[in-house]
Amino acid sequence: MRVGWRGLLGIALSGLLLWLTLRDVDLGEVVSILRTSHLGLWLACTVVATAIFPLRARRWQAILAPLAPRVPVRPLWHATAIGMMVNNVVPARAGEMARAFALSRARAEIPFAAALGSLVVDRLFDGTMVLGLLLLATLDPRFPTDATILGWTAGRIALGAGTLLGIVLVGILVLLLAPDLVARLIGASAGRLSPRLAARLQAVMTSFAAGLAVLRSPALVGEVLWWTLLHWLTNAAAFWLGFLALGVDAPFSASLFLQGIIAIGVAIPSSPGFFGFFEAAGKAGLGLYGVPAGLAVSWAIGFHLLSFVPITVIGAWYFVRHHLHFRDMTAAGDAP
Image (cartoon, rainbow, N blue to C red):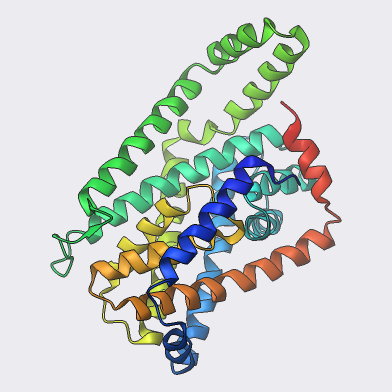
């Protein structure tokens, strides 16, 4: 898979952020903190952090329900693990494309474009839930209301994220309510360049819109919301177990707020595995709660590595078992 300029930009930004995060931290102190932390709690943290991916696969089943009879969870889990592995080893969030490709190859009834469209819904629910839980965390009496990150208050961060999410929602709503109109407009614009390209774009846009069909069913929306809530509460529980392993004095609500800050941070183009962005967001988020920089960075490095390794190994195993190749995914992504 090609890296491209976005991948190179992400790697450069990650390197810069990692340097800025670590420049005022004693790495010897970080090593000492991690060596004396609670191994059993770290093990529990790793198990819980990895458990979010099967939950994500189960939610994907509900998102895809309008496209075909219920897809078994097993191929969804395999595709999810493969996508997360690719995100961890290839820049520019290439794992999203890999996840859709792996599923469309395993299940012929789900076109690649429709699988990609379903992942837009997947991330839409993620963004909505993470933002909601972040705002909920600010209601905790222990939340430091006067603290800021780079001059931004928590309310300002939430407002900015909510505005961006609103723009995405409007775009998806237009596509959902008038998919044929959107397809025609895109076809007409592309037709000025190439009639063949216009026809292909219209077909892909129709398939992409099909991936959003879950939003037409209140029952399915409720089901997806439930699995999304369970997913992010599980992720927050993993964060909190990491707090306990290091003796970080922060409430559970801090994990809800911190995962929101990290989710916003890693949405920016970054290196494979989001290194640099994760550590910077972890240090800044825990710093709001008065956690010393050395301890905050120790948590970020420890949690990041322990959540990175298992899903990367599992995803690589499924990648090999399904005889996938990065060149095939590149070809699929190059299609209109």
